[in-house]
Amino acid sequence: MNARTFGLLFICFGLTFTHVIGQEGHPLEGRWDLEMEFMGKTAPSWLEVRHSGHKTLTGRFVFAFGSARPVAEIQAFGNKFSFTIPRQWEPEGNDMAFHGELVEGRLKGTMIYTDGTVMQWQGERAPKLAYKSNPNWDSPIALFNGKDLNGWQADREENQWVVDNGILKNPKSGANLISDQKFTDFKAHIEFRYPEGSNSGIYLRGRYEVQIADNYGLDPMDIYFSGIYGFLEPNENAARKAGEWQTYDITLIGNRVTIVANGKTVINDQTIPGITGGALDSKEGEPGPFMIQGDHGPVEFRKFEVIPIKR
Image (cartoon, rainbow, N blue to C red; front, side, top):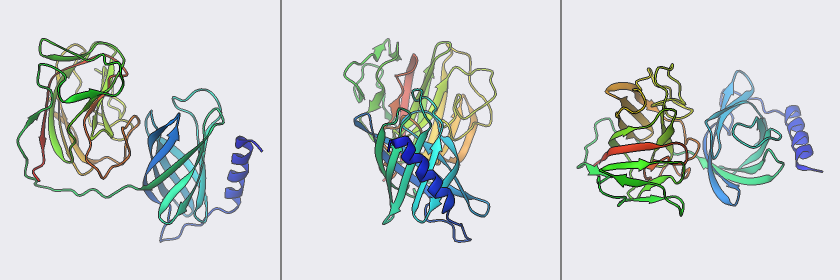
């Protein structure tokens, strides 16, 4: 029996024995931080399960790349479940099929990729991150010193990032840049610009991408300028034209974020549901670095200042 046939049988079985959700909810409901064995590496992923109506389970899924994807229905029987989603940026092939079970408070299962490859994954409930309404802030830290790449590391051997006349530049697609320092809660002030048509992003704690892209004049979307990629839509598009210097002032406390783009508050104290595609890991309860996306388009920075919470 091949993987696709097995998957179809599994889903049909699930249709017959779907769990009826009562007022108490289903034990699968909630948000889960996943780790998946993908192409020889551990790929961070994320799953949300929620109920819709009397007995339907729906959800959202985040893979190693791309945006959060809606799951139309999750078939569950007992503590076992399955669902399928169409490909997004994956190679051509079949829909991706997921089979899992809840065992002693943790999830484990398999994913059948678009080419039929079966991959193992496991997960645990996403932690509830503490929120402080009036934190004490520490002294500012200049993550970019205006001189060199000290304090940063590339995520691959070939590093295309350079510093030219006080400007940190990514002239072409290549390595992502990761800060040596890790942070929990913080405020950040970032000044950047990009050429026409470019696309980049800044990952908060290495897990939540704030989109940088040439979207001037477009209606706001969660995958456009200043959005938390695939999750949080800015209330307006505050992007300036390509080639102009722009600013982000970002406050992240727990998993609640405020983004001021070019002086306008476009996301105000909103909850980030989970990691976004391309995250370094799915360990949401741990401190994490900043990551600047360098594997898409050119981007430049002239200031990257962080004020961490005082411990």
